[in-house]
Image 1: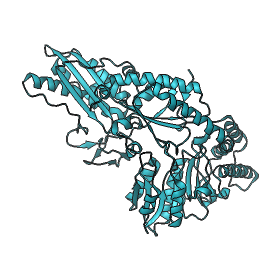
Image 2: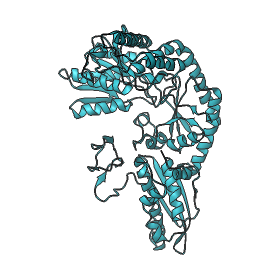
Image 3: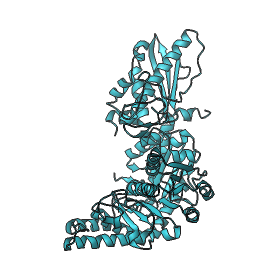
Length: 390
Length: 170
């Protein structure tokens, strides 16, 4: 049976046009963009073209503001550590939120080991940061605010524009981890007002292992990798040209197809949420009803654990994601779900469904049918379901 | 990720349910990592005549409960007490390293259920089943990282050896 992928946040198929661009590059464009000969020139032309495409996707003032990286994690590390190191003489205080991705959390933990101070802000029950809290948290020592654009577990989109007005006013650098947003929802870095923005190619049907960091012109930031002068002196090392060409092709398609992709994903999401009550009882829909990724559904199903659901769905050739501690290998309930008020048991029963171009209405129906059986099976085993009084 | 035996026991768990008027009940759980388990025993001639379980947890936790119930059924109480966490994991053809803690739950719940039976028989007041909030220190006094088995300090929330968050799970 063909696999139904309802986990597009984890993995997207490479679109045919992306594959074609990469295969052509593998066959014809093996050069090093830094070389001073025709083989290098050809590579440099392809690199520039991809940079223009990606810059177009996020509306940079100039393509030079795009730094290609190995993905979202590197971009985030680069943004946070790059500013922390460059501005250490001004201060060592960083402001963030309680629901960031591990790439942010652990980068900040590393900086704390090195003497930096971090203020982490709470979120409301929908997972949104109050911009007023950001304003209050900024001190004379603050060098960076890092708050994600959208959350990968609940889909909530943050009030980035409002936060950026505050950081600009207070002359603090603002980084946003937009790994799950860029290529999915419209993104205009100039309108948003961010100084740094991290993103990844595989979010929008590009290859894995390649991403980007938007660096507003004039932003004080050190490279994460030192060496050559590639990427406008911001990221040393010979570029992953094949991956970057794939990312460029995916960016062009995202620009063109985004409106129809959003409409289609919203349609599937609404169908799922509308029909879910006919299949299971006692669940919570996580995230903000309006400020949310159009393709993401996050639900906490009571009395059962998420990894078990994923395994049972996988047996029926349906791929979904869970945020249960057991599946994450972290042995602790998701900090995001606890931050929005889920208790430990509900956090354990949380699944994340993300739609893509390849999904159909039939996929949603089959998912609901299989989910209904899986939930029933697991609740029959669960001591919590038998004794809900506890 | 899981062995065939684990998947078999997860998909077709044996001995699921509750025994009304059980002779012994054992409940363990760790809401932090999410697994909770209840074991019910019917004892005849100091042997486990019947055993049922309920589990809230991942695939490994459910498979461990099922395998444990099969291993314990028919055994004398003394033999059943000797079933170790490792025995269960071995019978399942191994568990991924970060799932070994799940196997602790099974043998712990069984021991508690047997204890409950023996206490009742000895006329002791039946203790209220209590779910433990934290894992016991199973290797003696020292704490070990559940991922890489390196020794960590009591109360440590981060394993320096494998760079992993530990929180309360060590």
